[in-house]
Image (cartoon, rainbow, N blue to C red; front, side, top):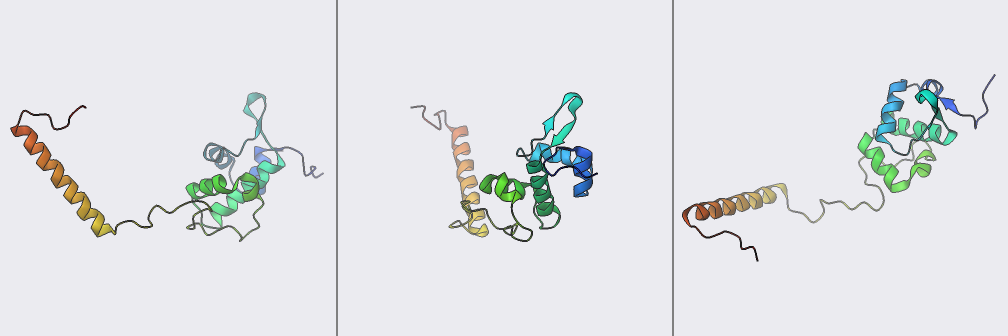
Length: 144
């Protein structure tokens, strides 16, 4: 006899349906705060239909679409659990694409070589300040 679609599912039933071990589901609960199974006495977990739908989407994003855990976390934060769970297969943004509203910190920045040269100049300036401090008794920075 098949369970009602809205019935609660045990961790074993969800793990079997998603073809993943139960320990992976417990691990995902620590990484994705949106997964909140009902916990009863003795720590038994009961998953709602929305939890199972979200877990199915997370599994697809991680195992089929090439997302990392961090990438799925960013997607969940940007779009919400309901939107991620409702994404049809193949319609998730590419894993290397930033979620909507995420600004890329690398735009309008220095090239790697320019950044290294800038850092080297800063280190040289710090060294000269330290050398000057060793030879004088005056404080380097004023406290006022």
